[in-house]
Length: 199
Length: 398
Image (cartoon, rainbow over all chains, first blue to last red; front, side):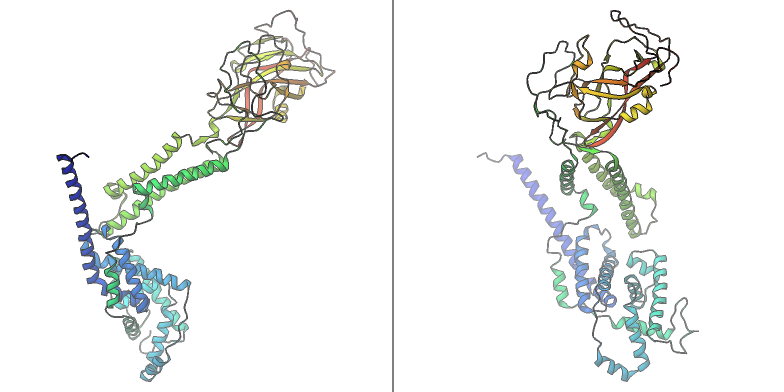
């Protein structure tokens, strides 16, 4: 067996150093990703729950978004924009899930206990919320997302465009049509705006 | 009017919607979700399939292997066996006669006609269009992908940039990736071409060979229309004209001569209305190929005795010039009113600059059908010497 020469040992050492460097980079990325996702997970999860309206599905959506974010973490050059980037992934996942939900609709049983409590509280308000509830699910996935963003955080059009990764004009257009459609669907449910609040 | 500017709802309804939306907020992420996500970064990132995967060497190699498999499948599906001569065996039967004048290399030994699949993908007709369209689509895909990615990056950059075509090509990473993708495609095509896997049927034409012969002619003349040569023969009502023609394969692939289009020959050639039919004969034996000049004085019908049948003509680099001889017997119509042409003196040699003094009609193109790689084609083979049929008088109505 040939004894290792000096230059062989040097090459081995260089290779090991390269391996260590690669591992360190990988570990650094994992640590940084964990730190960032931990910081912004609440925002993503809450956003998903608002868009999807189901905490359990929102958990799955946030988990899927985290996997996608980790896979594409190397492509994110500006780590300071992680929140916007992560929210965009969350919204894309939510949109896919809404599309899937439209293709495979699930009929949920009405919560009769909640209705009784709310009916005692305010009948008019109950009618409005029930109409919103029914009309919202009839919107397309893109429209549901813009309506949720618009009323959840009162984001401006520019902020919504950044989070969705689409032009501002598209956001304005989607929001306009989504609200018109929402009102039309609510009115189809029998809802009428109170006299003091309508045109 | 209490509507927000541009909104369809009043303030109270908007507030109700806002409250409804915020009621859907599930609050902070539960601990079990944090635990699930904490394991995400520990696991190995899965490979990202999609267009970027093509740019990685390993996936590019896999794609090349898959493409090669597809090409082999296409070869098996599109390759067609060579036609076997009726009554002929796969190998030549009996010793071939000793050539008297060998001017070209002998035929290669081995099974003939070949019946195995041709190892090539013929590019012709719809497949050629499909390949061209696919190449165009691939190029468009690369450009679109590059534009989309660059546009996204431009928007994401700090400060945001306006996307432009100039910016696209100034972007080094995108450009290098696109170049790599093109290089992979180009290398794949070059490998396929280098291995001879892509063949164009158009590049294998059927042409006229280098020999011509016939019975006793009145003479010949060069420098006729277009500088071609013409040989002149007498018209004999109801008679026949024995000629020896040759065909050559001027391409890189073997071709199969399938038939002679007699209908077109009779209708498109000036001499057609004086000809009732044309008969072609091939040399005898299992091999239809006769790559020799006939001995001087040999009568065409004695050299080629077998009825015409589809035969394979090898490419020029497989056997000399990839030529074969055929005997062509032209049966003339019975036209009693047309005076027969002048009679040549049997002992006199053919005149070199013969100029007919009476009307004559010619034919010089032979419409053959042939196939290359299973693709049917037609060719009007222009004869080395056109044939003129000379009448005995000016009255030539048949």
